[in-house]
Image (cartoon, rainbow, N blue to C red; front, top):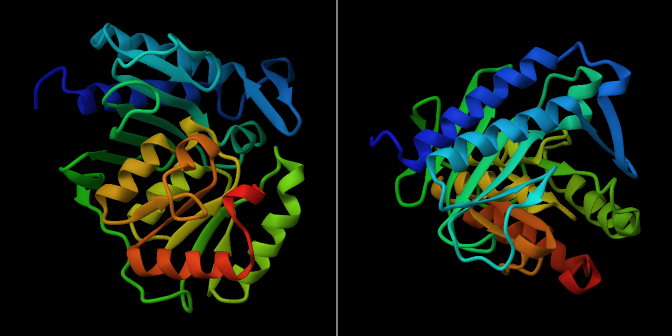
Length: 272
């Protein structure tokens, strides 16, 4: 690969950001953690990780723009290639010492709403590196990934996330949660959407659903799922998940079964 290939630079940024996070993991002082909003925290580790990612990515690609969870967009109304970064996906896990969190880095062809072309999810604790590039496949530590090819929901393992930042959506979520729970073999909520999507790409989970996610939660993971042969849509089966944050991800037949179940519950994008 070229030295400055986007995927190489994203991997370098994720690994180095992971070193920053590991230096803080298990040793954060109370003063290092702030409340951003209801049920939403940020730590000194998040901020330093994001600053380093931004420095590395824009240092290698000075003509690009950057969207980070903590600092927002570096430029608005642009069509330049964009990096979309969650410097610490799973902050609530991180600050409590629960060992499930990651760095997530995605890239688009142009603008923050442009086509997603690259994705890197790095789990420093487990030393799991998930990478994908449009048209080139998805890989976990060098091994090619593929979504599972189940025919429906029975026997499946599903991942989800609670809409803890969006209490107004809880009734719709619980309605869908109950319906899915009664159809599948297992249902997990681990607290990192980036890793949930990576695990769908790798066949650990058969599918994933969540309400109200942000672009940095899903940018890298969506590339992984797509390049592993899966589908990522909103709850109506469309493309509005990028701006609305309501995500269904799975292999084709499992996705169809999830969509059918969503429909029977009367949960639509207009309701969310």
